[in-house]
Image 1 (cartoon, rainbow, N blue to C red):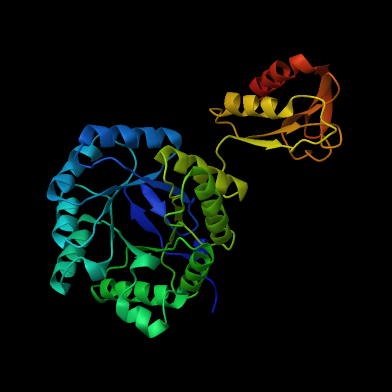
Image 2 (tube, one colour; image 1 turned 180 degrees about the vertical axis):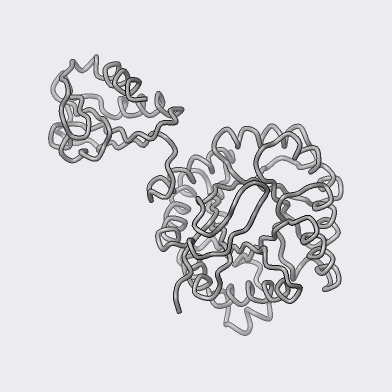
Length: 353
């Protein structure tokens, strides 16, 4: 079989965004506010938008939360996804209140009749559905059949849910197959991509706190994306959701799948370093974080790691003893004193915008 890569997946419309078919991989997050607290939820979504979030999910545990969607939608600018569990009536209410996409498991939201009502209303309102398979909640009958939690069990769970929707002639489907165990997640996503061409939402669920969760998510999501799989991503961190966006952007930028302004290249320093490179690199990163121009900036500790190794950078510096070089595309353009390095570099960067 041929692996279904992102350029060959079906295209799904979510509000004004396109998912799949080789369209840009979108960054997603989820609010941690109470959805019925409309003001707090709107404020958090607007902050996520500013950080670069392109799709956002809210939990819908009650009718009050579902009815809040209409007011939330009117104040935000990105697609809103409703996370529904166990009660198909909440899915119906979410659609009626303007939700742009549903995240459900058709097998756990009620009877077949309830699922049919959800699908009929989703068709009417042109609302796509994400089937969210999670390694921790696979059906017991599947676990027994496949000998526990593994990629084939997750594929079978996804298949059962897809079969329900396809039997109702519904095909605006996105799939996720999340696990907290990275090798399992990689195996599940690649296995699914051999069997279906539905667009895929990629994530490592319950990845952890900021430092370790960032590493775990980067390894897992990066490995999956590097195989040409994935149309949206979410980094799941036990931290401020803004941190999820920052990590997701850099995963995509590191794989050269998207560009988000400035990328800093910095050497790890060694005994040859004569300048305070670590602090200089941090200062440059902070001062350039809001620049929208796509620039690769190199901050190198010595001439060994300078213009030659960082030739692909648009601009950079290489430290020396009490002085440093500024270079563009590997070509030295000037030599300045150490205390003038930062200001001289920033001037060159401003001139390039």
